[in-house]
Length: 117
Image 1 (tube, helix red, strand yellow):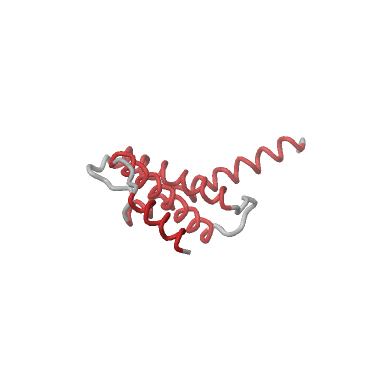
Image 2 (cartoon, rainbow, N blue to C red; image 1 turned 120 degrees about the vertical axis):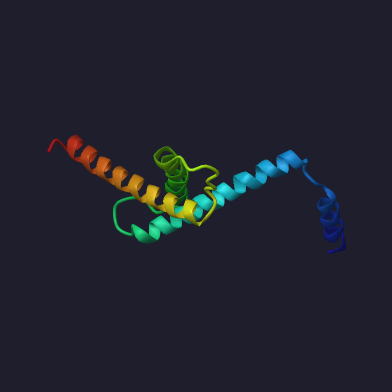
């Protein structure tokens, strides 16, 4: 146990350079936001044929996190909009729901076309 605590103390003394730490923090915040948006979307859109694995939830959430704020900026051109805010969360959830419905519609159309109906 003592050896473990010694190694842990040595590890705690190591710090990343400030720029790398900032980038790491930003990436982790966006990944967390994407999972939250994906889980909220999963709760709202419970039915359907989309898979509900962790990676799919992440992809749905990341789609909403990217498309939502970009669409809002293109539509309203809001200055200093922070996508990591309650408004950013709401618009990301709406965008991910819309993207999921588009995906479900296209997959339904594509499956009927491939079956020859």
